[in-house]
Length: 207
Image (cartoon, rainbow, N blue to C red; front, top):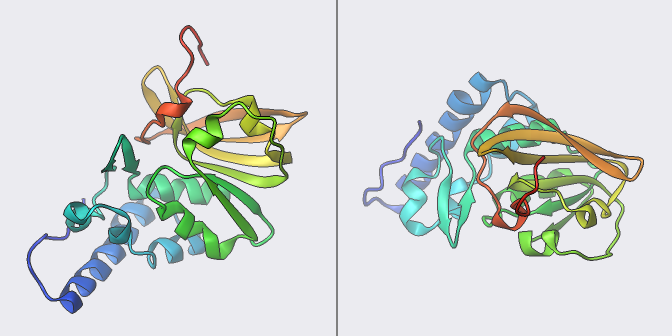
């Protein structure tokens, strides 16, 4: 776990402390867990996580667990975002649709390395609409129990999906593609990814 002491200090000192913590996060959380894509490590070693959490949580912005943001939202642990980005393998050719988990952090990681980025909130993403799109990559910053068909309609044929997937209370990183008009998700490694309430499974529904 990487923690920055939340003690009074000058702005310059605090910035230095956060920079040290950011480097330690990359080396002690991402690298040792197999997150080695250079662009992922570069972005996560550059973007200041402390800017995406409440003031009272800035001192623990680099800890290896999710940070509450209020209103049921969380900033996922660094490893969750690192693995999501590594599995997504975003490129400048991608038209990305991001379902934001509430922090804006993942959007900042993605924005400079993709062709275009559209950010929507979970309520909009879960709404039953007929809106269609041609996104090549869908990233959901949180865990879902149910993937709405309407969200899949916003993906182009063969579009990729990266999300958390929660089944019977256990969340895993999941990847998928849109094939034949349908999106299928494949669960990978177990990982603590915060659940997005808007994607809870309907009562009586099972994956």
